[in-house]
Length: 176
Image (cartoon, rainbow, N blue to C red; front, side, top):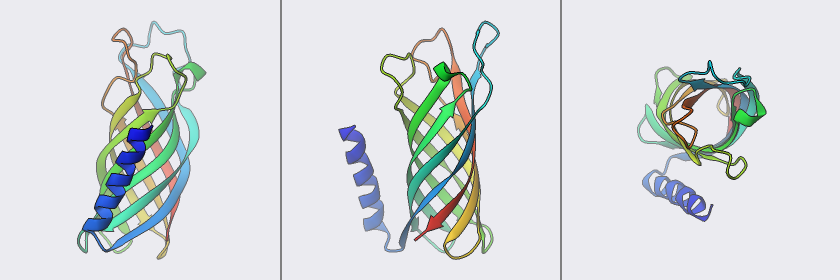
């Protein structure tokens, strides 16, 4: 946990020194997630989608008139419907956002997540994903966004069961 705190401070400090055009904000909303198993025919668990919420903080550093980099820190309960398949994640996405219209930005980037579930639950401690999304500015401070996250690595520690996590997030944000 100490290493994570140092990493977060370094990321935000580095971007802040690089760019003088930084703003900060908070975002939250609903998440619909699911574990995608390679072969779930042998599982006696409910692998349906999990509906939950997410909340997070972000910094938005403008690199040019049309491009910005947006590191975030958020909490997002994900996984599948069955309680044994729940993933409670602290996520660190870093999005590159591209302004395509005065009110619309497209974002893409990597994400690393830390599992905060029980110890020895056979779930990997770290998860890696790719993210893509769209953001619509309602006014100078409020925006809505829709994102899709596709897991890259197996969420389980063993190779007997293989699954990746994927989710949709629909939310609202406030930029200070």
